[in-house]
Image 1: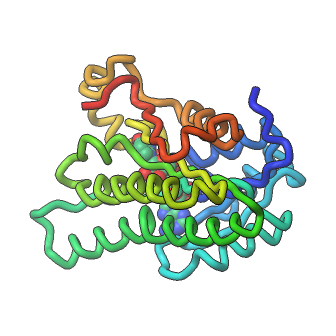
Image 2: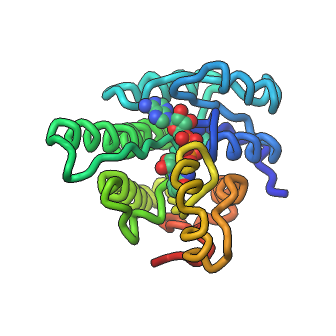
Length: 250
Ligand code: NAD
């Protein structure tokens, strides 16, 4: 088991799905975790109670609203006086196609880019400024396999947002390595969570056929990968994007 004792980690979207699995894994490895949530304070509080209130605290913020990052990051820092690792996990994947009205198309693009890329970038900005005062820190961004191979016609905005996340991550790694600021991305294929459950249910056999390993990714495997990157054991992997897709690249 990796030892994350002494690290204070902010996980966005930490109350559900991949985020909740990540909070559990990080706390079990000794980290103290700020569990950011978007919608359900009760869900976040349940995770805090599960891992232990001395080890975690819940913090709410709507990442779809421009300008929220400074307050969220400042409140997260206030808990233990610092953040060592930022895990940008929160994300949305609404549907829209070229056949929908332009207003729906634009609203969906704007919201997806705001949550998945712009607020994520704002949080990276806060983290970089904070890390500079502390001689370093890490950022781990949750991207997607969709960044590389594209997505279905109703999720082109999602693929575009995740491609942006990977380019941003690499830029941070290049730009701030000399200040000991490290940035990584993870790019899962299908993961069994609420976000994916409808699609996974409707396309079960097709999905099983396309994944050489035979099954979708358990959220815990993403969590373990994040914990590895957070551990500091992989400094020279800064800028890298780690695939988790059972070899279903294309
Ligand atoms: P999920 O829907 O279970 O969780 C998404 C999280 O993001 C939730 O905690 C939610 O509260 C938070 N969130 C969404 N909108 C928000 C907002 N406006 N303000 C604050 N928080 C908000 O989905 P998940 O599968 O656990 O997704 C986690 C990450 O993994 C996302 O970035 C997603 O794009 C990525 N991902 C998921 C899959 C998959 O198949 N499930 C595959 C690749 C990448």
